[in-house]
Image (cartoon, rainbow, N blue to C red; front, side, top):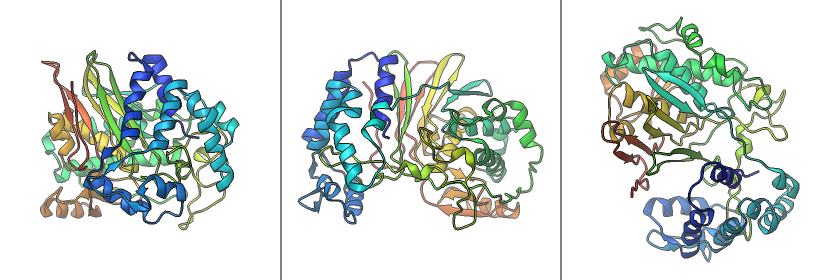
Length: 432
């Protein structure tokens, strides 16, 4: 069941200052009047819609069956009308009434499982944040069913014992220690993390300094560990997610990571409603006793069951010091989200980078299995790659990692600086 509308409605009721109508109307205008497509978005839409078998999807993303081109205006009248119902009736404009009926009708047409009752009873949840400390800074992040906050705090707790600054940013020693911390946190992720409403997730233990000490006990500063395969499956995650960061004039900060799972979700637009349905079910493990092609068995904690939310890697985070906001950060990127966000924190806290420098710096990723370090192409020299390989690491150079659109705050002046990620051509920052 889509949760975004309920989440925004709840957040606004609890913390909002501007009127709901004033907040929703710009989205209605953007959908109704349209906007000029960039090269990147037009190319993405063309690749997507070219293979779609769904009439409503083709209609929403093309003009008479011909994909929109860069420079053309893309308007979405059905979406505008759906947003008008949300403007006028808040969450009931989505989970009840005409929009809900359109969703239910699409479920009947396509053999889906979401009913009018499912939509009407959906509730957003407010949960206690994951909080940790790193060198005097407060780290505030997302709790389960996301694994992000727990894994970030676990890794920072492990790394706090090392003099990372002395190693040098993205040196072989630095990357080695990051990879070893990542390896251990992702192993915990696979075994323990899921929706805490349905599972006993040992959050306090996993985020404790004592647990980090125990995980650190067998890290060799000169030699890579080995990730031993187990029968724990990690379901695939798409890198196609969205993150944005906001700070208002009063210093209220919001870090939001949002996803349909794949870039266009299930690929199915609800006829008459103008929006895509997600394919978030893929974030669950398949089922008890069901194995994937490698023979890995889904852990019971993250099995699909009624009303349980699926495990994710979303890691919207806030960094503060002495009660003052330092940074609002996060990223898309599937399972790499956690490591991208953690490296942003290290770049700011450990190396004193400005937020644009922290966002632009090359990133690495290790997720326990497969047992390799993935590093952005041109992120390290051949010499450092050779040093890592001599330590026993398998190094894979790859494409861009994440799109960490973040905000940094100068504690001495209070100035806010937005840092769109240069990896994403359509990223941007705006202040007023």
